[in-house]
Image (cartoon, rainbow, N blue to C red; front, side, top):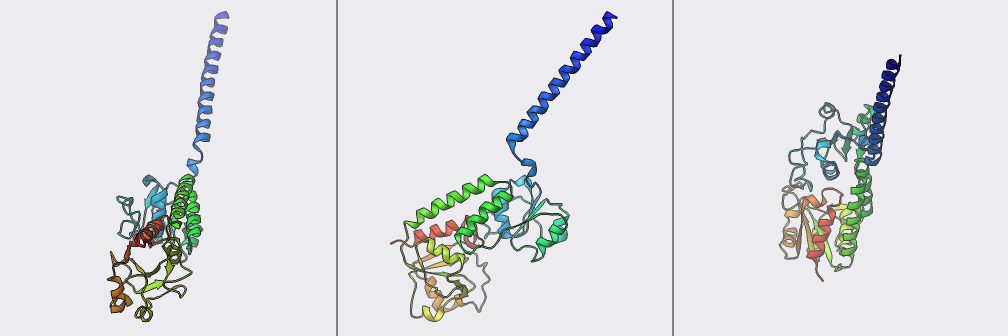
Length: 288
């Protein structure tokens, strides 16, 4: 009887020891989850449907969490083209996206106007980049989208760096007049993000008419801006054709002037932190 009781006590002690070890392990696991935050809440199967969405996905998401980006992600006019190398590509077609089984879709315009409603009706969350007509809206977009992508700290860091660069540019403005030109023969005045970029560079916009309009050839025949911001001309991706106003001798004479600042299409194709590169080029190209 004594032997039986002794063995029972040994068994009980062993059970208690195992239970204690398991409890300790569980506690450590819970502590790890608390310190790591909500990694399991972050999307891990992300699909990006267009060029603008690609920039944010490639900036704020690690490659292993991206299922696919758009066919434009690695092209010359994509700012994040180097990060797109090796990332699978998908067309912005519902069937092609659904077969990937994403847990988040990011888009600006990809998939058409009904894409958001369609994917959400199937239980797939959609984050839309949103249109930005001013720099504050760009910064709000950066922080909002980075948060949805699971990188709020990185989003805030990018916004803070952008504001610091903007403050630095504000002290270097020359007040000169600048005309924004594209191969498609259009320019833009007040009410556009490009206009706000010119202002941020300390410049005055030569184009006074609001919105997007043809290059003012008649005015250019008599008046000339101090400098020209020539965008997309390095790749000619902005739909040039034989009827483009940029082919007119008056416009071509402006592009031949030494005070022409090349603006890469990747800097202005979408509203993001990369517009600061365009603003900096304008500041450097318009000295006092």
